[in-house]
Image (cartoon, rainbow, N blue to C red; front, top):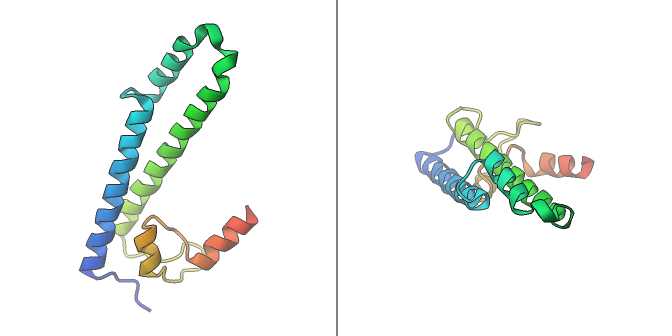
Length: 123
Protein backbone atom coordinates (compact mmCIF):
# COMPACT_ATOMS: atom_id res chain seq x y z
CA UNK A 1 0.00 0.00 0.00
CA UNK A 2 1.41 3.39 -1.01
CA UNK A 3 1.88 6.22 1.44
CA UNK A 4 2.03 8.83 -1.28
CA UNK A 5 -0.81 11.27 -1.05
CA UNK A 6 -2.36 12.62 -4.18
CA UNK A 7 -1.76 16.33 -4.73
CA UNK A 8 -5.41 16.93 -3.82
CA UNK A 9 -5.15 14.95 -0.57
CA UNK A 10 -1.91 16.72 0.31
CA UNK A 11 -3.50 20.14 -0.27
CA UNK A 12 -6.57 19.18 1.72
CA UNK A 13 -4.51 18.05 4.71
CA UNK A 14 -2.22 21.08 4.49
CA UNK A 15 -5.23 23.38 4.48
CA UNK A 16 -6.87 21.52 7.40
CA UNK A 17 -3.69 21.76 9.48
CA UNK A 18 -3.28 25.46 8.77
CA UNK A 19 -6.92 26.18 9.66
CA UNK A 20 -6.64 24.20 12.90
CA UNK A 21 -3.42 26.02 13.74
CA UNK A 22 -5.07 29.38 13.14
CA UNK A 23 -8.00 28.45 15.41
CA UNK A 24 -5.71 27.26 18.21
CA UNK A 25 -3.53 30.37 17.87
CA UNK A 26 -6.62 32.58 18.15
CA UNK A 27 -7.82 30.64 21.20
CA UNK A 28 -4.40 31.03 22.83
CA UNK A 29 -4.36 34.77 22.14
CA UNK A 30 -7.84 35.09 23.62
CA UNK A 31 -6.73 33.04 26.64
CA UNK A 32 -3.68 35.23 27.19
CA UNK A 33 -5.62 38.41 26.37
CA UNK A 34 -3.03 39.51 23.83
CA UNK A 35 -0.01 39.18 26.15
CA UNK A 36 2.71 36.58 26.54
CA UNK A 37 2.37 33.80 29.15
CA UNK A 38 4.59 35.45 31.75
CA UNK A 39 2.81 38.79 31.56
CA UNK A 40 -0.56 37.04 31.66
CA UNK A 41 0.42 35.09 34.79
CA UNK A 42 1.70 38.26 36.44
CA UNK A 43 -1.58 40.00 35.64
CA UNK A 44 -3.57 37.17 37.17
CA UNK A 45 -1.50 37.37 40.34
CA UNK A 46 -1.76 41.15 40.49
CA UNK A 47 -5.52 41.08 39.91
CA UNK A 48 -6.00 38.62 42.77
CA UNK A 49 -3.31 39.81 45.18
CA UNK A 50 -5.71 40.17 48.12
CA UNK A 51 -7.55 36.94 47.35
CA UNK A 52 -4.72 34.63 46.30
CA UNK A 53 -6.07 31.47 47.97
CA UNK A 54 -9.62 32.03 46.72
CA UNK A 55 -8.52 32.24 43.08
CA UNK A 56 -5.76 29.64 43.06
CA UNK A 57 -7.93 27.03 41.31
CA UNK A 58 -8.90 29.50 38.59
CA UNK A 59 -5.24 30.34 37.94
CA UNK A 60 -4.34 26.65 37.75
CA UNK A 61 -7.14 26.00 35.25
CA UNK A 62 -6.04 29.03 33.22
CA UNK A 63 -2.45 27.80 33.19
CA UNK A 64 -3.48 24.26 32.24
CA UNK A 65 -5.57 25.60 29.36
CA UNK A 66 -2.62 27.64 28.10
CA UNK A 67 -0.38 24.57 28.36
CA UNK A 68 -2.91 22.51 26.39
CA UNK A 69 -3.18 25.11 23.63
CA UNK A 70 0.60 25.39 23.37
CA UNK A 71 0.89 21.60 23.10
CA UNK A 72 -1.73 21.62 20.34
CA UNK A 73 0.22 24.29 18.47
CA UNK A 74 3.40 22.23 18.70
CA UNK A 75 1.58 19.12 17.43
CA UNK A 76 0.14 21.05 14.50
CA UNK A 77 3.50 22.61 13.65
CA UNK A 78 5.12 19.18 13.81
CA UNK A 79 2.43 17.76 11.51
CA UNK A 80 2.96 20.57 9.00
CA UNK A 81 6.68 19.73 9.02
CA UNK A 82 6.00 15.99 8.60
CA UNK A 83 3.59 16.68 5.75
CA UNK A 84 6.61 17.89 3.77
CA UNK A 85 8.43 14.58 4.25
CA UNK A 86 7.95 11.21 2.53
CA UNK A 87 7.17 9.46 5.85
CA UNK A 88 4.03 11.47 6.56
CA UNK A 89 1.05 9.17 6.80
CA UNK A 90 2.91 6.19 8.29
CA UNK A 91 2.50 5.05 11.88
CA UNK A 92 5.53 5.97 14.00
CA UNK A 93 5.20 2.71 15.95
CA UNK A 94 4.51 -0.02 13.40
CA UNK A 95 5.12 1.73 10.07
CA UNK A 96 1.66 0.92 8.71
CA UNK A 97 -0.09 3.38 6.46
CA UNK A 98 -2.47 5.64 8.38
CA UNK A 99 -5.72 5.64 6.40
CA UNK A 100 -6.53 8.92 4.66
CA UNK A 101 -9.91 9.00 6.44
CA UNK A 102 -8.09 9.10 9.78
CA UNK A 103 -5.72 11.78 8.55
CA UNK A 104 -8.67 13.85 7.40
CA UNK A 105 -10.16 13.70 10.89
CA UNK A 106 -6.84 14.19 12.66
CA UNK A 107 -4.09 15.30 10.27
CA UNK A 108 -1.57 15.48 13.11
CA UNK A 109 -2.06 11.77 13.89
CA UNK A 110 1.21 9.93 14.49
CA UNK A 111 -0.19 6.41 14.83
CA UNK A 112 -2.58 4.03 13.15
CA UNK A 113 -5.75 3.33 15.11
CA UNK A 114 -4.43 0.03 16.52
CA UNK A 115 -1.18 1.55 17.84
CA UNK A 116 -3.01 4.61 19.17
CA UNK A 117 -5.46 2.39 21.02
CA UNK A 118 -2.58 0.36 22.47
CA UNK A 119 -0.80 3.50 23.65
CA UNK A 120 -3.95 4.89 25.26
CA UNK A 121 -4.62 1.56 27.00
CA UNK A 122 -1.07 1.53 28.37
CA UNK A 123 -1.33 5.08 29.72
